[in-house]
Amino acid sequence: MSISTPNAISTPSTSPTITTDALIIGFGKGGKTLAAKLSAAGRKVVVAEASADMYGGTCINIGCLPSKSLILSAEQARRDGANSTPETREAAFEAAIKEKRRVTSMLRDKNYHKLADQDNITVITGRAHFTGPHSVEIATAEGPVAVTASKIFINTGATPRIPDIPGIHTTPGVYTSTGLMDLDDMPQRLVIIGSGFIGLEFASMFADFGTAVTVLQHNAEFLPREDADVAAAIRAQLEAQGVKFLFNADTKAIAPAADGGVRLSVAVKGMTRGASQACDSTPAGTGNAHTDITGATDTTTTTSPTSNPTDHATMSHVQTKPSDDGEPRFAEPAEARFCLTTDAVLVATGRTPNVEGLHLEAAGVELTERGAVKVDELLRTTAADIWALGDVNGGPQHTYISLDDYRVVWSQLNGSARPYTVKDRKHVPSSTFLATPYSRVGLNEREAKAAGLDYVVKRLPVAAVPKAQVMRRPDGLMKAIVERNTGRILGAMLLSVESHEVINIVKLAMDLDAPASTLRDMVFTHPTIAEALNDLFA
Image 1: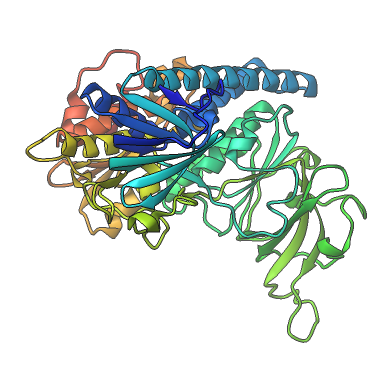
Image 2: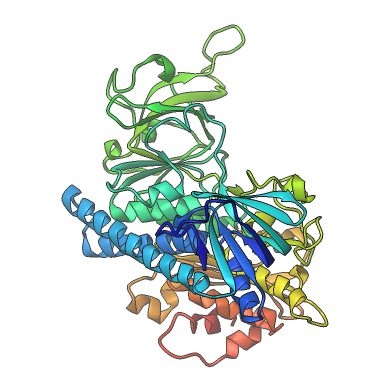
């Protein structure tokens, strides 16, 4: 049953009050799976979702699945040469957005009816906030609904983290990943603020569509948590797609450009260029021909070359930071200022737990220093009979972790003698869907060394894998860390076609404490990418 559905089913004129066994705030993976399980066990469940556009959660609506749909369409456009001219690029992008919308609409509808059609489940569309330890008010389009529940589960996910940059909230053409995936027209130039894996996925995708992409990185190191050789290989592949990088770059202000695009004032530490008129004092689109970032000279801040620099976000109006006496410092400049102009900006600076407006204090639910709902190893909050699942509790931000959080919670509700806990969770893998996917699990070499472990490094170029050659996808490398004396697999990093499938085999071996020799000697079908594990662990 439902209160306030996409078809605007109305509620009674007086504000209803519902008493239920369980209230789940948020329609994400963990919450919706728990709702179905509780319903099957005969429990009465209310699911509150703030938006009808988010039935099913982040993954199917604005996260994993729509982005992967667009990534696959972009790869197809690159393979077919549809990214080669403005006309074919626009057609390919329009078709990709249409397909993405079809997929998300279909999945959203299926997810909605999977719960709302059950007699034991009431779906309420509206924003919820706590009014007491076991009471919540949900603001629907037809008025407030009060819900009292014996057990409450917070599953509100995460929201993009927006840095405090003047103009970032008011300038047209500045997007989070949600907005950028729903554009009607493809931007010819795109600047991405942030070079984490979300930003890099979008950089790879839009480069495949034919967009000129420039990535701004706050510090000097690319993917600082990854091994240097792996990070270098990822960067090289992105640069081969035409993606450009600018490091030590801080965006100071964002404003509309005269041509209808976006203008960014960027400070770059360590740049050595002569001074000219400041970005902030010159109207966008005026002055001399723009200077592309490849014109900058520096030994620590680097950008990738391109045969046609003007295709990318352009820079002009450079100034060095003055010294205390007001004179420009050319010998050792603290920073140089650039003015970038572009068609669109993606803010990809991470995601933060979505707790705004929940009034958690009314229920006695505390937050961590990082703003996540504070939970223990059973995902219990600081309030009795209230749990938090998924991104909102500060754990790894993956849909499959939200699903595993459901397992943690359900093990407490189904009478298990020993509940499954977060501490029982092993070896969380991850995949980043670049043109060559990057997947990893466990420790990398940097982490193994920091932990003082005695290990050996296994390496294999993807070009040595027959199936990769057959697929005409020989780029990348495979790397594994193995404990020297025990043969225990400590971790693996796979920058390879189909790595997102193969990494699960490595995880399974690690979960079962199988030594590296197990994968070395395993009989795989041929030709496959998975059989490369024979050689990697040899």
